[in-house]
Image 1: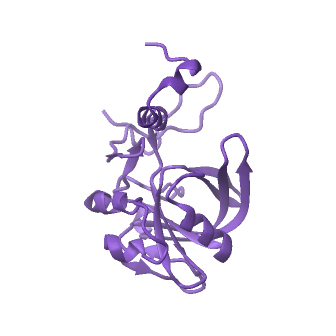
Image 2: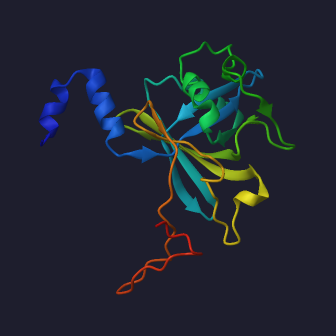
Length: 215
């Protein structure tokens, strides 16, 4: 099958959305926690998080113009702080429900059954049930004119996780953390590792790190 761009406009809207969203394969899945200036907490489910840099430590996230995440963006812009929390297999259905379009005055924490976790000196709520929690401070917003989306870039200021999840070289073990991933907007997966490889160099076969090759 070959699909070209002139066929996209002829596709049924839901079909086209599902096709394009699932096309890149597995993506990062994060529940984003925010709080409004009025003290109302909010949770949103995002599959658009990406790495921007390590020094300073920055993560980016894309907001769709017609998405159910306007409260998240509004809270981030007004308060300046937000959290990212990984999803676990035991409650992925609750996480999915948090993507529903609830009124601003309703907190997805309460409605979907998640416990709030706060840490000293940080305004936004984390999810107590998560095993990897990231606190970010807003650093930049970029409006993308081609499709009216907004890219939010935040600097990591807090990391909350068990010591056992970080290896001697700083590697975060998402298998042990039971982190769930997603393809498209509604298909959730656990992962099986193939192995970690050493830094790639020209004309040299990559070595396996710490005996992590999977037979």
